[in-house]
Length: 264
Image (cartoon, rainbow, N blue to C red; front, side, top):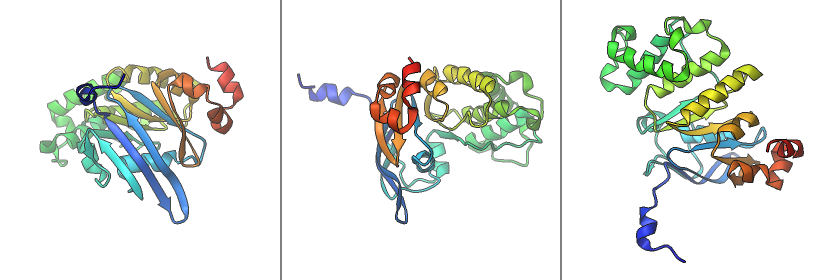
C-alpha cells in the first residue's frame, strides 16, 4: 500500500542529511558520493579501515574543508558552504581527535570559557570566566554530566588522558548542541579508560544526537543505533549493528570473520 501525501509530509526530516558528498584532492578522491542520514536522538557511528575517508568526511561536516560536490543539510538548512563558527551556531559541536584544552586553567575555567562562546554577551574574554556565576553554573552542570564534578578546581593539566576527553565533551555540552560530532574519542585510551568512556557515551545518548567516528568496535557496537561503513572513500554498508555485523563485504573489508562470529 502506497503512503498518502499527508503521511509522507508528516515524516520528520533528519537532523543531518549528507547527499552525494564528494571530496577530491587533485587526482585522489577521498570521499566519493557519500549519502548519510542522522535522525534526532540517534547515535550513528561511522567506521572503516585507515584511509577509508573518515577524517575527510568529519572535516567536511564541521566546515574545516569544503566539498568538491554534494550537500550537507543540518536541521533543514543547507550548511555546505558555511564556515565552522556558523555551523556551531546552528548547533554542531565537534570534539576533535587531538585534545585542545588550557592545561594551566582549572577544569571549571575551561568549561566556563567554552560557555562564553555560546553566550554572545559574554565575549569579554578580558573578564575572568570564573567571576561570572552564570557561566560557572553552566560549567558545573556540564562537568556533572561527564563525571568530572569532583575535579572542578583541579588544573586541567593534572587530568588523565581519559579525563581530558571527558573535559572536552563537557566543553561541547555547555554549548547545548543539537548534534555532537565525536572524532575518535577513545583514541589513545587503555582498556579500562575505554570501558569507562563507553559508559559515559551510553549516558549521553539518552539526551543527545551523536555522530561517532570510532575505531573501537566494542564501543561502536555497544552504543550505536545505526552504523555506516566506509572503504576506499565510499559507503559500502549502512544499517543496524546486526545488519552491519552480518554483512559479508564489511567483514572482508574491515571487521574480519572472527569479530563477526564473536560479537553476537
